[in-house]
Image (cartoon, rainbow, N blue to C red):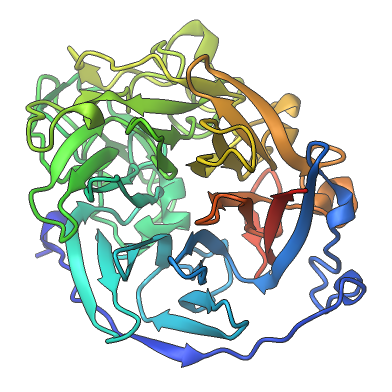
Length: 494
């Protein structure tokens, strides 16, 4: 008998420091790299505002996901490994670049790999994707001791862990996105982690009553013409009943939490956030998270849903006092506050969505900022330095669209592929770092940026580091990422 997904526990993993053979390169040598998918890297092909300079710091990274800094200036870059067939298998590890120039790596045998990293109080904190649960761990570089802090958050599907980040008072904030892509587990999930976790499903953060609207689809596990029905918060092939109540759980997904640094006393601040991959707190202690839009494809297709940044208001409440988490809309409300079946969100391909929740919770919007659909806002950081400029503004890495795979619309083809700076007070933004022509360098030409996945300020606040995921080829039917094409860029004010 198959076990319930919530009973599948990760069992820990091996982690250790290893030597890493790296070399230095001249700017001239970067114009003839051995990686045919990205044969050149050239800062002269990117655009930043007058008064700033750009330089590549690391090249040849494989599927990088985040950058962090120790107090002494050591730079950490996580490489995410992969459990998806859309990426080649590469080691899950964290590359460490010491101030001396020495480089080594922290390697780990996890199913997918590190997604978020941060340094706090002498330890490296890592959010890991892989298995039925997301794991949040800390690793001490001196003792090489690994401590698993959180291992209960349901995962195993599409979306990613968010954070961890720390507030000035030492509380740890983290998140996790949805298992399903569109509110219901669908066949395309079997092209990613659902193939290894067929029992995975979304879990609500509070009790919800279902409408009983199920989604009929083909069954990729069975020969044609078998079809199945799947409901919200159910494993693939399991229908929901009208009026059925699904119990909410502290460790849901689509959630944002905070806890003590050892992972205890976890408190759910918010849920209903499809993919809270980017998290940042400003100097006033206000927490903001990114969230990506629904896709215009599949048996629950939704069009023109804007990317958004949510203000998590419950983060200002005293620790331990939040009695009810705020709800930000997943699986039934778009970023603009309209229901997924509103006429403005009717798709031009795929089957239009139906509502899944009866009497949904009160919506916690509006968003602090709305961005073009499929910009894919990722990790971000607030500027806390007058020397860099734009103090108090939020710098956001935009990975870029997967159109035409996730949208048939021509206007979506160039959304993202840049870093923007956002004024969260008035909801406006300006481009800050991009190619001369919007889009990835491998498509628009030149040797500039491909897909920014994270941006963080150095501890002294004088430089912004932008992590570039590398080359991803997208067609109407599939996508494929290329290893050894990631770059870490550094932007400094003259």
